[in-house]
Length: 185
Image (cartoon, rainbow, N blue to C red; front, side, top):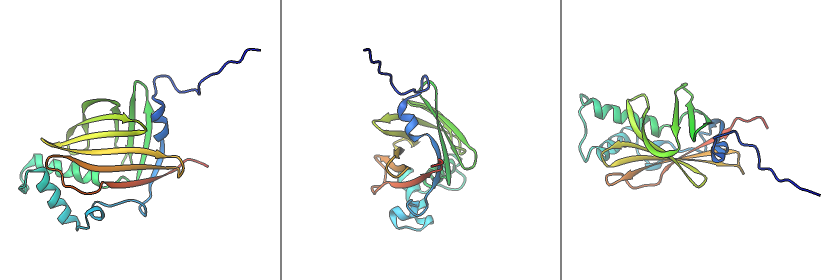
């Protein structure tokens, strides 16, 4: 008697880890942090604090386009999308679509690539760290926003954590956004 073992079918060229976070996800606002909740500040206080940290201790004038686009990027990264669609693609790439319909495709090679976040193009490096998908979004000469995505199968949720990394990054706990699966059960 001959027995043949076969691996679970995975579409050609798609990283199996990408399948774990693939799906349609809706923000669970009750379980998610807001930018202000993580520090206990008002929106204006938080925005000024992060702007000072990123700009080396000074506030930018409204005329500085570069700074304005960075502040917009920070705002867009800190505030969670109400919905996400995550789809693996061939050749170790992953696509993330938010509720506004903005879609971004990332290489998971870990190499930096220019990604348009709506406030301009920003260097982003995406890679796998065991079960976590990690994105390093460069927002200043020595500051990076680190986003991590992890599927929690026991709760059918997608966990997204967001923290600042770098010499001028404020210390504190990362923001956490929890998304519920929209899969038919």
